[in-house]
Image (cartoon, rainbow, N blue to C red; front, side):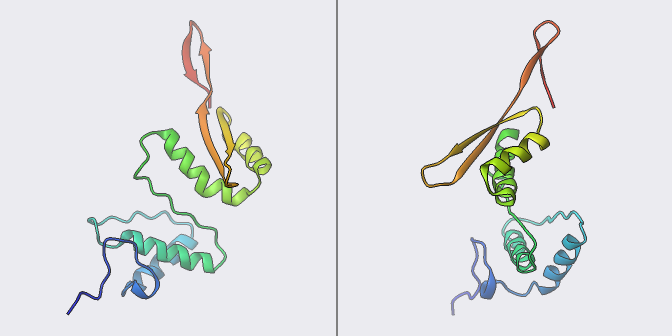
Length: 140
């Protein structure tokens, strides 16, 4: 008999097994504005649980996003992913995105690139100005 459970990848819907209690708790806490930290060993289904919670929240009309931080090696990488997954879907047009970024991230310069496939790539650079005797500082 083969193993009926899928593993090694995120599972959803009919492959997602027996986590209804956890789903209800997470949905309740997130809709109440709570911050949640999930901690367990690798391969225990944290990502699958999160994806299912986000799907259920989306069905309620709540905007959600999931950011995989595995490839982030710098604050710039993190900001790029954060904006790509949250700001771009929320504001939609490049002009609205730029307006939001200017108000929210003074001291950061946004470089926006429209790709040939129509998608938008946004990256950020910190504005560095001199202070005193050529001592660099970061303006926020």
